[in-house]
Length: 339
Picture 1: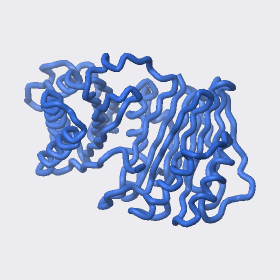
Picture 2: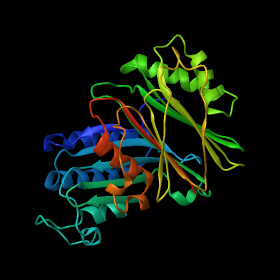
Picture 3: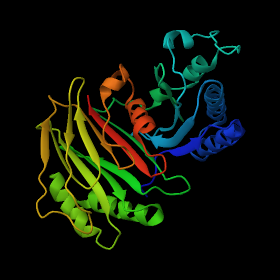
């Protein structure tokens, strides 16, 4: 079943911190993390919530379980705040440095306990922290990094148990294919429409995004319908192809330029244009694509976030989520980058 990738925890009230730690601990325990790892995760969550209480306003933590292609599971935790930001990240990472009279071991401790750590902060904007903890040592994977990096951040509307947004990708020897979909409305029926679309996407033999959308359209007529975007990257020609129907924002980018892709009007499963043309771009011009559902306001500029393109894709997605999401809706941000 395709559903939210992350659970959303509001961390504005200190009285909820123990609940957040308990729920994330249980999430990792259910995934099979051993006691040592669970203890590390408890400390990470304690430090993150402590920092949110001391320095932030409107703090939030997102958490989810993921799996590498080699089968190694990991817990991903993202801390997002609207605090004052950090003026000197390196100094704050040093043990013993504190602005609140504590021991000053928070961020440094989180980094040591994490298998993957990243941080982005800007004065007056706030701080976003990423921590990943793997169930097994990463060296056990014995595999090379993939040429295609894909990250997804999908959450359910507050009060809902399933998300009306969803995403799925597949790889073959010749193509990488990605679907991002938003079911009409919210809750189980919207989630059902997305899952039916993913089922069709899995079996679709076509390589054209427009043809894939038409194939999905005919396959989900009995659902309430979706808006969707499909991306296909041809590994041989090194070319992107993109097509969308409805309010899914698509943006190609590199370090210097951006290119927005327009979607067609319509609802997949109900009414789509007779002709859906693919938009194409070369990898040498754009090596990254970002897709967002209508939970995201459509305009954002990388120039607002100096240095963020050097961060993990998850940090980049969290910045978009932080500044441009409507936090009363299902929402999704999906990024793919070709190395």
